[in-house]
Length: 393
View (tube, rainbow, N blue to C red):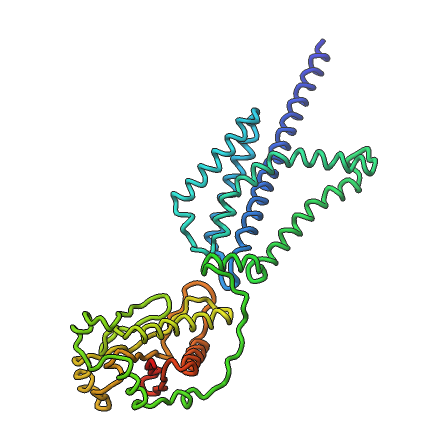
């Protein structure tokens, strides 16, 4: 009797130990599956987000850490809580609620405003990341079971310990790894689609144009229209005589020009921002042509040249003569037909591809040359003032 009781007790102890070992193993397997799920979520999210990042930009390290944290939190919720819900409708209702709550939380914390358009792909991928997790968690076990049984039927295998079975089970994992590696290689600078989307977000249009060399011309010699020639055109197309600053504000023959999307205006100290309509139209057309020319060479349209001098009033002429003995009282600027454009000062866009100062200077010369050839203006190359002195014809 004692022997039987001893044997029974021993079996109970062994059974209890086996249960603890089994629970310990199952716990390790669950932990591995949770880590694997969270890691897969991170790779999917990062691959999609990185696909939109321009070549010249990089992803901040703290931002990548944040993505890791969000993926691990989502993975934990899905693996340890969501999978335990038995009712199918309740399961997917909980998934939808979680996705909505996460999007609201991200919006509340300013996630969707961070990084500008550079991280637009990450904002999208993080938003849909929980959906990937729910789909993977819901179908992964079923897929492995179906795929394993398919391999066993095709190769008529009796055990999963076969090398053939293990080899073919590894193939999907290898394909996923290759997909992620390929995704990283196709991201950033090598992803034309991503670059197109990024440029469309930044600039509102897609530009596949490439840069090219500008024609070599001696513009300092080509832009040699003398003051007498320009003065004659100014008297013909502009005001009849110089006016005061107060008169300029109310004179209906003049239009006020302001910084806009085509050109910038320097802080004016010896002139006021007024031109006759014909000259204002010439200036605007030059700004448009300047941007179009840069766009045709693959640059952003956001470049602007700088206007440094416009209409000189009677007061500004007197003030200028005190500091510049070479200035004349009968300047073309007094008639509202003339403006100066700096060939050294430009505004470049904050996003998109920016041109160098040398490239913008060459484009400005080309635009002024074309307008001169069309008979729309006279141009004088000013070395000391580093500007193009332009009078409408």
